[in-house]
Length: 340
Ligand code: ADP
Ligand code: MG
Image (tube, rainbow, N blue to C red; front, side, top):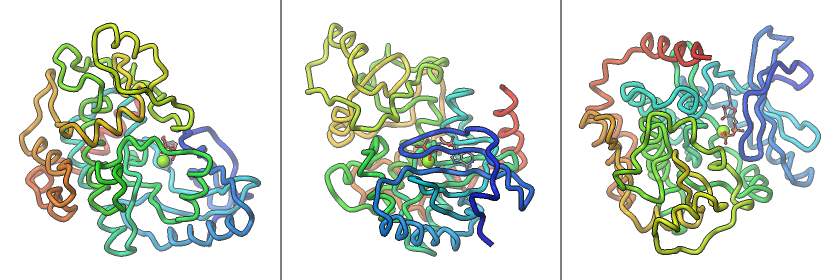
């Protein structure tokens, strides 16, 4: 039986993103907590009905690596979606709150995301299209799951009409207009894994510059603007880099994409992804196991034909030789919420 809006009592806000707000709710009928997402849908009634129909596919998505779905319904100008509450929040919330994620845990994140992607594709022929740390959620049972995959084409269209995505996890081939494939999700996974391990978004306007290496405190400075809708940002023309220019960029309206106040407009970022070498899992302050850096490199070949598939990545040493158990993840997840 699907959950209805009248079964739910609001407890507290969990977060807001592109066109959506997520609330922790109490389900009076079932006596348990859940997460309710409200998405602003700017569309006529026929389109809204179509969206609600398309979302029903989520009913058949049952996997330990996919956030559970309990129902959807219209709520005035919104579409409401009720989901399993993931009580440790998103990996984005976690690293911004406590800093870089231990590399062994990042390995388990990679494994869970790959299993989730393979389930969606092999069973439902769904490509996720929006892998990023805020769509990877954890709970204190030591589980890691993905959410917000592209089940409804109409929903994607209706959100795109009001909000243009940040596109920052987009693969080079997507930026250049190629259709989505599961390999585009693999790229987004690679970028997300570096972000979690470093505690900052991997692209900066000074990539590779030694003195710009991340500091331990970067997660506190990591700017919320990185998730602003594109329409509010003003693309800047590419300009030669100089120290004056750097200061100017700090004050400019570009998106702040990394700690330390470096900014890059969305246009600069998209050009960078297409034209520059892919980022690597390297840090001046930490060393990572070679299995981890190789794995990330295999996710980030700019040519999707060179990039590994989820199956190949799951067979890699980093994943297959991991000694981290679900109990370890439980302990880790608990530690992230106890630092409040
Ligand atoms: P975005 O993914 O772009 O951040 P969303 O509207 O999808 O925007 O989600 C906003 C925030 O709500 C997420 O970053 C996450 O912190 C939180 N959230 C979403 N779904 C859940 C859930 N099922 N359980 C717990 N927290 C959630
Ligand atoms: Mg999301």
